[in-house]
Image (cartoon, rainbow, N blue to C red):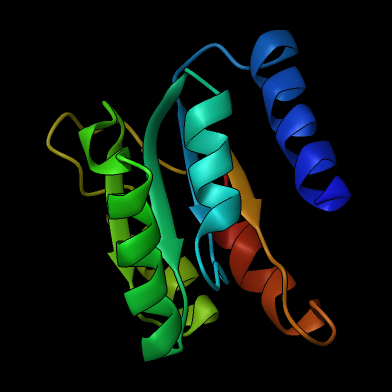
Amino acid sequence: EINRDVSNLAIMAYDRVYNQHPLIIVDSMAASGISSIRILKDCKNVKKIYINDINPIAVDLINKNLSLNGIYNHPAHIEVSRKEANYLFSEIAQNSYSSSNNRPQKPNVISIDPFGTPNLYIDGAFKAIQ
C-alpha cells in the first residue's frame, strides 16, 4: 500500500508542477487494477487510462473491481486490455500519431510493475511516452 501511496503522490505532484494537459496514464501490468482505481479516485485530471494485464484472470478482476468501485462512471476514458506490455507500448506509440486532430496523444505516465526486472520493458515504454 505504501508503494501505491507514493506512486499516486508522485503522479499528482507531476500533474500539479509540470503537466499542462489532462493526464494519459498506462498501467501496463495492472493485476487487479487497484492502482489504477486509486489513481482515478485520487487524481482529477485523468483524460485516459490504459489498464492492462496479460493474464485473463487479472483482466476479469480489473473489470469486476472497476464495477464494484463505480469507476465506469468516471469522466476519464478507461481502456481495459489483455496484452503483453511491450505490444501495448508499441500499439500506443503507433496510434498516438494517427489521431484525428493530428496531435500526439502519448501518455504522460507509464507504470511498469513486473514480478522480475523491468529491463525488458524500458525501451518500449520510452517509445510510447511523451
